[in-house]
Length: 177
Image 1 (cartoon, helix red, strand yellow):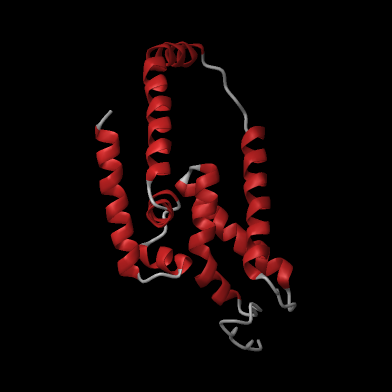
Image 2: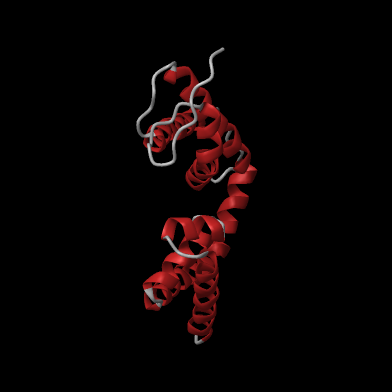
């Protein structure tokens, strides 16, 4: 088994699968989780992405590993959704009636949720751009302060302050409700 040279930071060429796994697996896991909303499946499918990566790569170098892996991820998610659609569906009259009753009682909650989402979007629009970006990266995309700071090209302390200030401003804006 021959060893490949470690990728240089700025080269973009990735020759070691272990480096790709360490670098991209957290992002790929969040990508899959956001699309399927099933944590147990997200972990398995993230591994499936790297299995396909290893089977398809061979000895060739991948020039843009992030794009290549996310392309595989899109296919894996699509395959999982299609497999889920093919799964056998059992019809249970009792469960169906219970679900119908629950939905009837949930309609006011649904209207309230939609109204709350609209208010939240309006409040987010009132935040300064940097505050909104820091908050969305950490709370919506699930990045750590360190990852958000790297993505925003800012110090970790600045991002932490932006998140804190954004939450305080949102709290104030939404309390008026």
